[in-house]
Image (cartoon, rainbow, N blue to C red; front, side, top):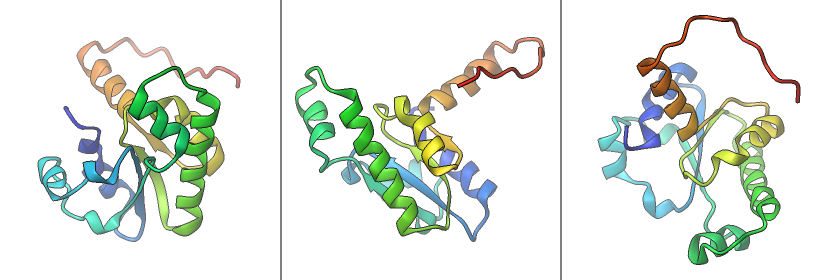
Length: 143
């Protein structure tokens, strides 16, 4: 489970052949045939991939690693997600490929109305399988 992209084949099967999976990554250079093969992705044509590189606040954070204004980075992430959905309405869920993006997942979901998957969800799934807790129902915190 070394790659968030391991979720892609499952998500592709779930959404079906007519829908697309939106992926937001740090850099397009991290994507490609080698990664797809390693993760069992056989239909990359159904992926709509957008990168965060090129956004000034995200770039500054990734290049310098200095203290950042999270609100500015989050605004860039939300703009990327929004434009991705506007440009391709066949996207039916979003995967955050970059490990820096999960703090924005709930806002992306709120903005787009789509399911959002990321590394934290994958980790929770694996953790629950390794330490299954007795069923106690599903309670949500009010937002």
